[in-house]
Length: 214
Image 1 (spheres, rainbow, N blue to C red):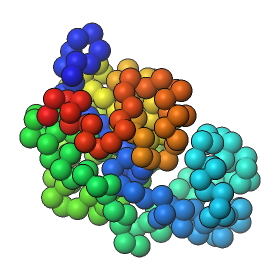
Image 2: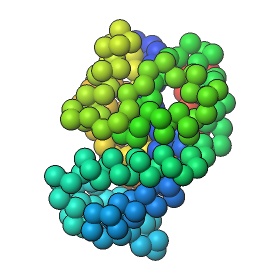
Image 3: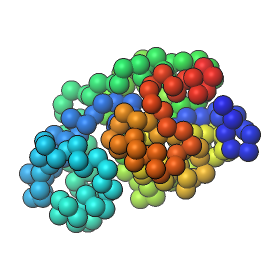
């Protein structure tokens, strides 16, 4: 599959939570643990689905979370996630990553979660497919992490695709000049993602290697 300006895509940068790993349950429990610890409102089970299409700023206002607390809250959530069993991978993810790697596509994992948690979720065999790791929160946001991986890979932005499950993943890909890919099985609703205009919206895990001709 050609990238921008006709260049072949040689690098796929994956999100973890909601894209490779089915971590909604784990993250909901960790979020509510942080709510109890820091004194903001918890997410009720019956409202979790309705919150999928809210952007980050709206969620902060809704739950009464001040911006200055975000680093401490994020650290608390990652710590909780590291003490419970790792979330399962979505069916077919392990085979998909292996097929891409065998086809010569370099793989990166870009996540606000910790690298330790990501490696636990992937398992040693699947983690060995990943060439570049850019985890934990960054002052420069996800677009900055994308640029960091590109510098390490030596590739041009048009030779890389970002694959994530949230609107912010599409926005970060656009900012960094990457091809913007989205998945229909993660956090944000497919219709919401489609309205944001990704270059490709994957309806199933099996469509990803097919997109690369793998």
